[in-house]
Image (cartoon, rainbow over all chains, first blue to last red; front, side, top):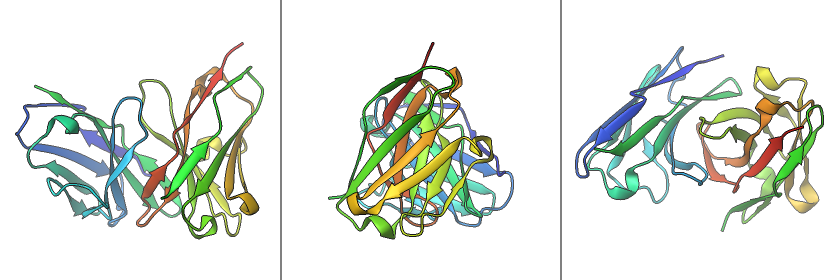
Length: 107
Length: 118
C-alpha cells in the first residue's frame, strides 16, 4: 500500500500571504495525485487533479506541482475562505490513499 | 447539476451491519466509478473502496476486505455500501464520491453518520 505523508501538519499563515503545502508518496504515483480542501462540517472539495490541473471553478491562486513522489500545493495569496484542512490523495493500481492532511489556520 | 444524495444517519450495535445508499443524479450513473470514503470525528479521510456501476466490479482497501460490500441498482442510479461486523472504531461519517480523472473525485455526497454503540 502506498503511504502518503503531508507536511506540515499545521500551517499558520496571515491573510494575503503565500502558503506552500507538501505531500510525499512512499512510491511513485506518476501524476495520479489530487488535492482537496475540507471545511468543518462539509464534504471535501476537489481543488487539483493530475497533480497540476485546477478543477472547475477553482481560483487561480491555487496551483499544484510535482510528479512521482513529491508534490506541492501552493496558495499564492490566502483569502479568509481558504483557511481549512487540505488533503492529498493518490491513485495507483486501483487503490487510493489519502494523506493525513495539513490544517491551514490564521496566524 | 450533479448530485449525490445519501441515506440518513444510522445507529448500530457492535457486530451488526449497516448499509448506506447514495443516489446519483445529473449525470450518467454507469459512466463513472463511485468511491466510498469515511471520516471519524476529528480525523482524516480514509478511502474504503470503489465500484464500477456499469460492470459491478469493485475494489477496496485491504483493511476492509471481507467486511465491505459495494453494490448498485442501475435502474434507480443508486450505489450501496454495506459494512459488516461493526465495531466502535467504525463510528464515522461515510461519504460516496463520483470518480473523475487521474483518480480524483469531483462530486461528493453529504455524508452519512454511522454510530456504533452498545
